[in-house]
View (spheres, rainbow, N blue to C red):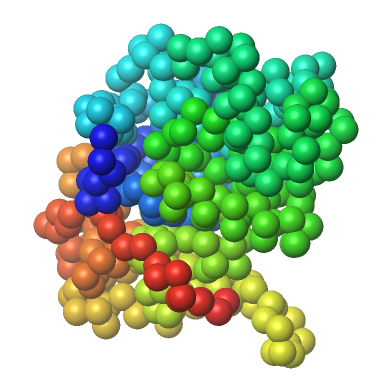
Length: 369
């Protein structure tokens, strides 16, 4: 089937996931997340630990343990190889087994804990191939060798018989990528794929993912809190805080014109080469500055438009609506740039289109953090 770059691979809308809390109120890990991923596009989900990044990704594969987890609402529409669009949240376990590792694959943070130490890496790569492809063991081994070559592992004929402890951290991560890509998935979920790797290996791994994305037509969901990685590798950025999207834009627009105070706080807290400071600016200093919350009003939305921030008191003119996230609105404050706002009088009736950007960064574009 010919690759159609104009049709989204994944469309997440109003995703909400909560967890039991030992008799207390349920913990809302994700509350109304929305994003869209196209073929040959990398969407980076950015935010600090606990903001809902990994929960959003694991929901796409129904890897949230239930209980204690629960999908409260929302849809995750996924376009399969033959063009059929399904809601991943409504699929049965047997249906999800056909999708996991086959059409949607995931790279986890720590390769040493994700690889089984008592099986060779070849056996672990071949497991998914034999499960999803109608081929014998000899052919599966050839596919596994090809996957290892694709990710730059030298002498794959020798290394396929080795165990995870015989590989360096960077090579183990390449094995994880080979496992994920062996069945030619349409969507790759990369959860902190360069954690605990030195910067040289990080660059090699991310460059590899970019090349494979382009040559195979994959969509990539990149989960990270490293804004340097985002600037270099992402096409679109989704900034999350406390389970909600606070800003969504293409990577160039977001770095050049961050609108939500939390996004500006993230950017201002990064040390810069050649800039001497006595101390770094903290995120709290930004979001506690009333002046920082006035920029959105200047976008022409209306007087009283205020960025949503859970630790601030709700505005006096807050207008809740009869829906789960009634105090919050994800507003397209200017073309192709969304910001999470309190549903004040200025935006009480706004029902803007959900985040959806086909943007792909030109290969020559360089964003300086």
